[in-house]
Every structure is written in structure tokens, then in C-alpha cells.
Image 1 (cartoon, chains in turn green, yellow):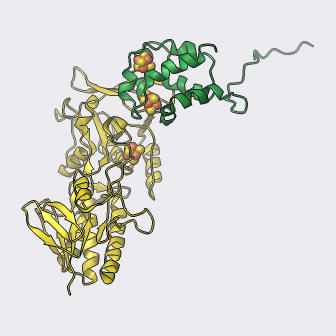
Image 2 (cartoon, rainbow over the protein chains, first blue to last red):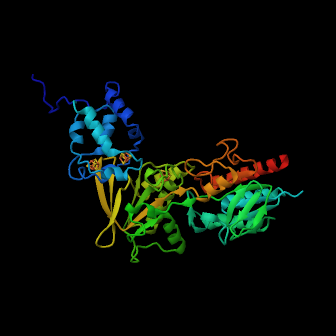
Image 3 (cartoon, rainbow over the protein chains, first blue to last red):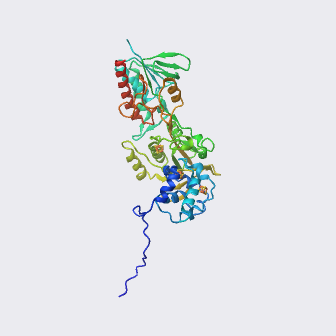
Length: 111
Length: 336
Ligand code: SF4
Ligand code: SF4
Ligand code: SF4
């Protein structure tokens, strides 16, 4: 008897696996811009993000994923940023958010 | 020889310090800048987490003060502090054998965060305004109508590098939750939202109160900092935030936006520090000798602290600290 097809496929695991993720790039990024480590995830940057209001781009989420060693697609996502700098006006931690975009793009251009 | 202690600031910490010292037979002079004692508590309606009317605490303190030997002088602004006494704005100099600084804190001026429109748009308030309105018995929108949608914003003027206030003001989370509950009970039809970055419920009964706000009163907690507010055509306020837990930008119009303002250090701290060689913390609050065994002593012998002059504190903590400060002053006078 043929195996019953329940309609499930094999997906890539969604878990952020910190046993496997290579944090080398993330460490490099944080070494160059230690202030990014002070992010409290308040989302003020994303709330007023010009790009984020029009596309699915979420600056806070992307840089947080990068810090967890989840690099895939980060470069492409950061390309959606228009470098308008509004996020920087709001960040309560005074992070140079636009600099973060540039740095991630520079470090992850080859991912 | 009778030794006199001067206490600078007649809020709860100052009153309690004075009471304790006078119970021990030490002549005490309590100086207050305003025309009545009580400090910030005079403008407050009810206290978290028990909803105790603020005046109950003040009335009892004032009553005890009346029966004590404490000498009280109001409308006396102290300009300079030294270990040997203080100088008033009038130029008068008062000598003392020890000085306790209980000058508390300054409320953050919400106009500095222009993006929230306080003082610019209608229907943007601060938590201090709400206490005043509750005291007056009437909370309403600018046009007098009852709000149907209310948003509170946590951490206004705290944890914010943009306004040079890096510290957490500690008591404002619970104040925001308390006021959200009070307004929800006053306007049961209204939807109440609290926008927060972290909810810090440090005291006994606080977490339970937060839970009660969620479960019984259905107050909505949204994790995200409001980035801007703007007026709508019909006189309401539109706010934007990221709903960080869903990862999507969020906007809504509210009838009232209430800014939960923080505690900042007094400008006078730096003056006192320069006068007497006292140390300030990076936050501008005065620095006690340490945070454990010498938390009510300054780095200068003969000058002591109690209450929120060294860090944001709640009423109970300020009252307890006042008793410790009185104890340390007594020891100091014995030694001196
Ligand atoms: S600089 Fe980029 S991330 Fe920041 S608000 Fe503008 S578009 Fe968004
Ligand atoms: S505004 Fe600053 S602190 Fe807040 S999430 Fe963005 S980068 Fe982090
Ligand atoms: S107590 Fe809460 S509202 Fe106040 S500064 Fe701290 S986190 Fe913000």
C-alpha cells in the first residue's frame, strides 16, 4: 500500500539554533559597532521607518536576527532601507542605526 | 551642648527623618521651599499598589509632626549646603551640626520630548496631570467629553539617551498600571492601552496588580515605544509604534495620550555637590557612600541623605530610609 500523503513536506527547521549558527560575522559586526549591543528592542526605529511602512522590511528584526547568526537574506533586506535616518532620531539608546544598515551590508554582502 | 540637625526638604523623607530625630531628643529644623509640607505627594491622588489615598499618609505625618518638637520653616529655599549648615535664598545662614538632604527629585518636563506633542496638541497629558485631575474629581478630554480610547506611554524621560536620562525611574511602570486601572474603572467602556518597553514590577503586590489589570480590567499591553504622535482633524491624537511582538508597525488614534513621566535629578544637586564636595552619580542623583551599609551617608562627614535625592524610590522606601538616616545622624553626633 502506498504511503498515505498527509500533505506535509519537510521544512527547514525554524528554530534559531545557537549550537550551529556561526556567530563570527555577528561578533565582527558588534566589535565594530558595540553600541548595537545596547538595543532594547523597543521598536521605535521600526515604527517610523519609511521603508518598513511600505514593505515588510523590519529593521529591528533584521539586525536582531543578524546578532543571532541568522544571516540569510539580511543583505537583501537591508537593501530596502532608504537611509533616510528617521530611525536614528528616535532610538532611545542613541544607536547610529543608519550606520548599522551600512555595516551589515558591508559585512554580509557575500552571504 | 544641644546639637542641631537641619533637614533640607519637607517631603515624606524629610518629615520622617525629622520625626525620628526629634523622638530621640535631638533638636531638628525642617526647611521646606514650598508653603506646605509634603513634597510631590501633595499633588498625588492615590498610592500604588493599595490605592491608599495619598492624603492619608500625609495627614498622619503632619499630625505626628504637630505633636513633635520639630521646628518647621516653610517657604525657605536652601541655596547652599555645607557640613556646618545651610544658606537660604534670602542670604540667611543657619548653622547645624549635621545636615540631611532630602530634596527628592524633579519630574521630567514632557515638553522636551516634542515628538509626543505635550503642550502642543490637545489631549496629551502626563501622569502628574492625571493625578491632579483625579484629585479634582474630573478626568475628561479637552472638550469635556469622556475618553473612549486611552493610551499610556511608559518611559517618557527615562531610559532615553536623547534626553540624557539613562536611568530607569523605577516607580513609573507601576504608576502607569495604576492609572490605567483607575481610568478603566472610571470609564468602563473605554479601551486602555499601555505601550511599554519593559514592565518593571519590583515591589510586593505590583506584579499581582499588573496581572489584575490584564485579566480583570482587560487593559491591553503593547510592547513597543511610541515613536511619534500627531493630532487628527477631529482633535484626537494619532500614535505610531512598532508592535514588537508581532514585528509589525502599528498606528491608532486615541482620545487621550498619557505620558508616563520619569524622575530626574534636581538641578540643585550639582550646586550642593560643588558647595560641599559631595559626589553625584552620572544620572545627577547624589551618590551615597555605598549602596549597602552607608546608603544614607554622603562622602562628606556630617551630610546625610534620605529618599529620592539619591535615586528614584517609592514612598515606603523613602520613609524607611529616613529612619536609617536619622539613626546614622544620631551615631555621628555622638561621635562628633
Ligand atoms: S534609515 Fe532605513 S531603517 Fe532607518 S527609518 Fe530610514 S528606511 Fe528605515
Ligand atoms: S530604536 Fe534603537 S533601541 Fe529601539 S529597537 Fe531600534 S535600534 Fe533598538
Ligand atoms: S519603571 Fe517602567 S516606565 Fe519607569 S522608566 Fe522604568 S521601565 Fe520605564
